[in-house]
Length: 577
Image (cartoon, rainbow, N blue to C red; front, side, top):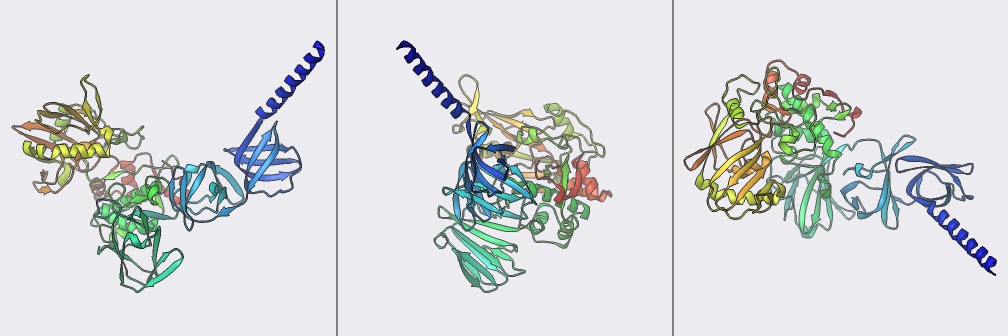
């Protein structure tokens, strides 16, 4: 009896061990791409790897070139669940866990959704995050009312999508007036309605269920809210929580016609304008591959947050610059270069780490003295930077009115505006406004109402001299403001008057011209002496024009500001930084 029980127990133990062993060896490969089924084996691509498995039994359905969940046990395929259903449509918005597809609306995305890139007969694994707004996949694979995969051709998005903000404070609008210069149409829920050339329509949230698309006959231009700029391409109006959002979709080349004159004066030298066009195109392509505006169904907006678009009329000079650089982009080691640009240098350039607290710098965007021959120096000390601002060394931007500037902020102006601006910066970027606690440590927080400002001082600069941290000592609190932009926003206001290098006066700026300045107290006022206009990273537009006047061509100008880069045709580029 004892022996029989022992044998039974051993048998049960072996059975459970074998079962668990088999279970442990079983694995599901979701959304695998089935390349081939032949000779008792299956070849599939999943997770960036290619697998060759044996089949545990016969498979009746030998269809390939489809997605499937493949279950493998002990190195043999025991189950295949194919997913043949597909839908087709342009990607309009992208967010974690969902996409909006043209003609289908918002659709959930399953965990483990896979992207496959096709080029001829070749298929490779992509990353789901590689999807970009405006892409039109060959098919979205659907299972259980969720997107579980997509097939895209290895080609770039040809059109750029621009969220139009214009002079509005916010993207969302309560009403939009649209006028087409040619015969145009509105499309909603499959219904097409024509509108006469020159006619104007007024669109309100009640008229838009989800999405209203406007397209016109050849040569049509759109006038928005009575503006003078003629937008090309199509217009798309979406209703989000009873606010209207307006997106202009158009070919990249046409978009650049509206960008270059807004970013650089049409009276600039042609070679400088061409350098600007290459920078603008390179920057645009990077944004088209990114997702900063994907939730709005766009790649960029039309403000200084990206590139100014539609603020100035097209000109023959800027159109020529765009046309003569068609498809040209700036590359560094096979990748698109980060082509930042700004108005005027104070005589020294800065880096991404110093200006935007980037995780890392790139070699072609370095902090250097902008002379005929570049040199490096450390201007992080107050005395060193003050001396640099006062010396008369001839540099590339030396003749710009904004090369040097001075303004005065009274104590009353500070008390009237500073608290509100501190709170606004805290709302925009909480980590950039910090207050000191009782233990002497600083943490992100909203300041208390200012009582009596005792001092304002720069306590940290980058090697280029750019302000990285401003400290404000109030009667009962100490506040620190980080990043050059936040400092400029906190201290600047439209009433300040700037005396520029050539003696001319300027006012109306909402923020300080640049983060390259020194701060000195005079009685109850603060005098700011600075230089340059803009963030200071990459190409100075004024400097580019000066170099062009000295005989430099566009490629030479770009090599000066982005050393080690090359101008190449866009179709050979990889849209990654």
